[in-house]
Image (cartoon, rainbow, N blue to C red; front, top):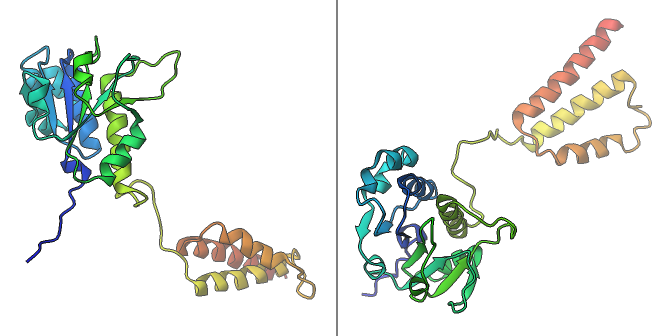
Length: 254
């Protein structure tokens, strides 16, 4: 029996490798940047502080991503960090005389999602010196971020966040985000909207704004206006409440 091929999402096959990172706070910030985008595979190559994953500053900057820190692996060589990977991308802001093909972060993300057979690694150099040429030579592509050419300095965690975000967006596509941010009420039905317009028309006639015998195109134009608003049921109720109040005031004045 042939079993169907299981396509693994990018979140489970993308590794973030930091080479000779100096500041513990940057390692913690990287862990936080990764977790907010759904990634967890972090490998540290010869960090300046061998106990960086338990360092107070790293834990503080990681915020609630201390699990990513706790599970990070520390290795002594880039070759060891790349074990199990069949594709590697280096990030560099410095021009190189010789380098692998250059891709944008977005193009890289699209490729990684489109080719699920790739178990990839993103490699970031130290804050002080970046990546050495011999590290870049091990990579399939070189990634650059099109920052301001007059000031292209990015914090390590910021660079990780940008790459992680592009990869997440490539994986999710146009799928609406699963979040409680913002509010979206229940869409109004056709019947509710028709009832609102009938009510609103009565109110406009009572005000003298609309002539019942010669309405021209006012109501169709109002329909066009409100159709762009994508009305919710509660909003229809508010508009009907306004119309009701107008009619009540008009009747009271009579």
